[in-house]
Length: 312
Image (cartoon, rainbow, N blue to C red; front, side):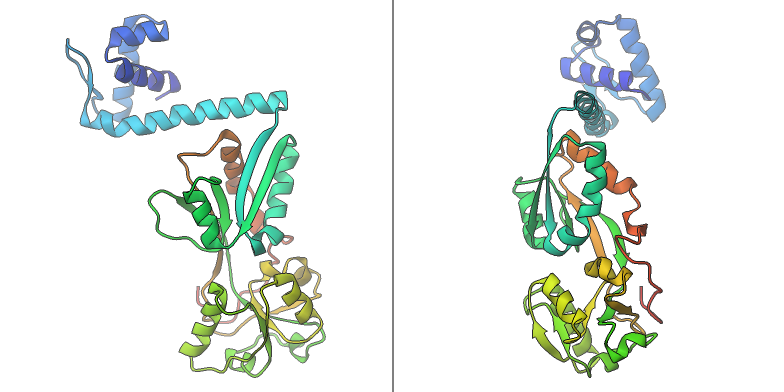
């Protein structure tokens, strides 16, 4: 199967005949027929019902049609992107991203992407996950980075990384030297957490309630940077995946302690996109995301031992 065969398949379907397709493509009719025979041999099924009154797609041809169209459009977008890159033309990239991920995850991704495509204009919308998903549904932008996925027939999700939740303390905390900690131990110490209403806060509360354990939240705030500063100053501890803490864990200005028999669900990062509306530069950015090793980079997510007895 090759691009010329796919172009010929689409030309026949759109024009209704082999003859008109040969005129449209400026090739002899026998070449048109040969290309379709080769394509049908590749897929293993006839794609056209040949009639004097006109050619119609078989059931297999109808099934193949949207994929052939997508292949052609993707290649055309790729060619446009290559041409623009060669001419150093400006392109617009819009991304929706949750507030925490825009601070910690997105910079590293964009830094490398912009080094390859310096003429790209970038616009980042920082919202909650629900608002990122809503923005893509409404067509305000076509891709985003979120902390969870949902069932949606119009949108595509792909996981970029996954990590455990840790108990985060100050280096000055008496617990900083502990190799691990239990949830029961955590319940005896003050925590600094997001305010009520955040999905992550609800997850933490649910786990403690299900296990009939005490949860002592002394400070509540919606600003992650402020939470990190309060923990570093030893006003309390917090519960987060290390990537939320950025470089502080790698530099040990914050200490991440594994939780024994960790009952918390893994904290995951997803890219969400509407594949039907992606521009050439958005496709390039997705390819960059998928091929990068960000989740293995210590600068992005510090490499830590898995929690004792953790549940994956």
